[in-house]
Image (cartoon, rainbow, N blue to C red; front, side, top):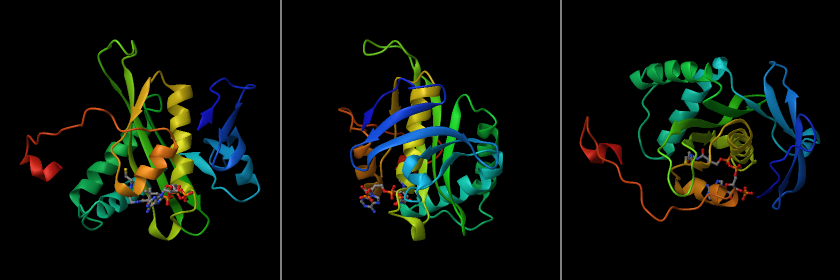
Length: 210
Ligand SMILES: CC(C)(COP(=O)(O)OP(=O)(O)OC[C@H]1O[C@@H](n2cnc3c(N)ncnc32)[C@H](O)[C@@H]1OP(=O)(O)O)[C@@H](O)C(=O)NCCC(=O)NCCS
């Protein structure tokens, strides 16, 4: 993605996606008073309208997180699963920390929130490839099955990357990719790292967490 990080004027910036042609993204107030991102083709009805999530979206973020787990072959359990309550409280708390957490969502006129991408900052020790200690982490990307392949996840993730780029001090952004997501992430510039990420389970056997 060819991206010009310098704002062309206060509140708007140019953005080019070679796969979709040149789009102009503008910061805009949504009906819920949230600052959202609108593409020029969204205005013409071809692309989804993305907005930044607020605390009222916590249940939707949990629901879509369950969609992601199910797609990954990790049974998410029913509506009363304990993790959902804990996750909703966690998302609510994060959504009240807009400097270090953001989620972008797409609303469907019939179904409500149908797609989301979440991002959070963490701190790392400086190294020779960057003095910055802030790193972005992308997670919980999912779109409801009936609304897939309409550009919703792309729109959410593009807005999230713009947030990392423009509103945080992050030097890099990372994610763990499922096979469904690899093509999208690659098209947005993500690349596999030279060294694999490994994981050790401490509260249960490591295999539980792979
Ligand atoms: C991956 C996922 C989020 C994509 O959502 P989406 O809204 O359908 O994605 P988009 O319509 O924005 O597609 C963007 C691009 O991703 C790629 N893509 C999307 N779904 C794909 C699939 N099933 N297989 C391969 N590539 C896919 C395509 O390159 C697509 O671009 P194109 O439609 O122009 O060809 C969705 O399939 C999903 O929720 N999967 C289950 C959960 C999951 O795996 N989440 C990712 C966790 S890392």
